Image (tube, rainbow, N blue to C red):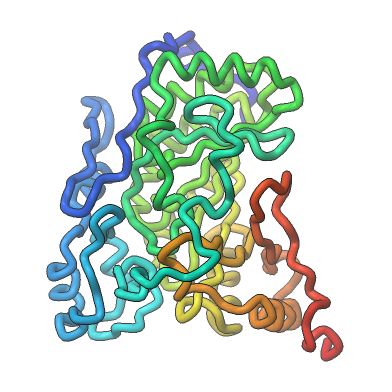
Length: 372
């Protein structure tokens, strides 16, 4: 990786010029994006042209007969890119990609223990737009916007309106980091940080690169999977020439999400020196079988991505129907260990409120342990 930015990229950029995206739109609203004159608009056109109408989605997939099983959410509505829909199987109401985005009436059932803030993030929000839960790392909510609304999203009830850092707050974020010398990594999240334009994202990168204590910048993104054209040359070239190490953590739950086009663009990112990792959420009916998990790990590796985390579901209100028993998850994990090489087995973890780390799941709380 090149240690210094090219001269034209390394100039000081006024922090006051930073602007970030809007909160996640409600059902039926379009995601507003700014088209820079020097920036390719293909991915932005795809973001602006996502499907938000249930009838339209069902018609495309030839599934209009299942409409009675669905409902129209008032807040966190249907939102799915056409590129992601193209990976779904027509006529299959149990398609694993479709199940992740289709609002099911089961979401309306209130289940004890499933809450709006399952990770208690509000307790670790010292200033607007910044979460500081882990000692050496902070997370910045660059935007509330995302091209896809996953029905299990643990931040679907998050108050983005109160947590979008504007230009003046960005200076406060820099000051906060300076006051905490133990911080050496910043995670850009949201929403999805790749939902903002390259111009805006580059301003964020420059602001963080200006802090000598920061040596790693991490981007958590689903957009690179659901609209892979977001990984354009301008973005990848800028990341390649960052002063900091760049880690991109993509979010993929099923091997079908990585078609050849997606794999090619991920491989290109890896060739640029970007570390690519994947995190998966274990979801009932989507990827809770050995066959699905093995196929996912192998497909990720083909695309240049290493499996990183396999998360137990965060208990967010409306997502209880995706949850599986911890014993079932452990039994599955033992099988994965027996069928995959160690470097293709993600860590089985759960995130618990107020814990300063991801909590590894105790594999020995299972009857399967003695079988291997």
